[in-house]
Image (cartoon, protein in one colour):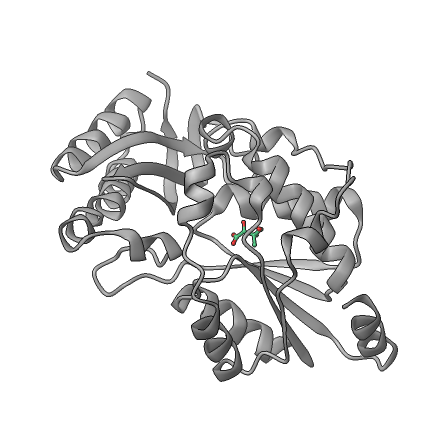
Length: 280
Ligand code: PAF
């Protein structure tokens, strides 16, 4: 992979890279479309990274429709599909990992210990192998996107990061590989995740951002669905991902909820016209 990419670079070609864990959906295809438009060559990687799963069962249950993914990659005009094995990415005796930055401590980091160390490590390895001009990630995984931006800022690979807005189903559910695990009833219930974000967004725009009030509203919306359980919800600064005390300009809403045995996350950016107090 490295020597192939080196040859592209020597020829002065730009490389757009979309790292994934497969089970491709319209969100990934949007990333590939951006990469296609902006680069000479497009690389898609599929690697279900074992080190970022904090539960063995979540890793084994992760969907792996490889043949379908390969067809979709071809249809999206990807030039290369890079699908290394776990043994190639983590050869016996490997020792080095990449410690996740402070902005990985809260939210997903708190509920999925070790997850972001796994993400930071595999993304660093993939960057070393592919050496892309531009790396594309989805906005839905907002904390992961910030972590990757920070990693690139801190470790200086010659790569730019582009965060592409979330693609949603017509009813609002954010595209995710995990959606395939939802039963038809759970699929209906899953709508409360985006509805809770929208309800909180409306509150904040109307001038109400107190943590207790926003959380209560989101919890009430999520509770409408029998199979749903809120894990966390937060109003944060889009760059630091720390809870905001006074919302000025843009804030980011984060949510994680269980729908039956499937954990979904989503996010929404909200623009405040005037400063809104969020404490209390
Ligand atoms: O978002 C994902 O699919 C993964 O976390 C990533 C960035 C490909 C690293 O394994």
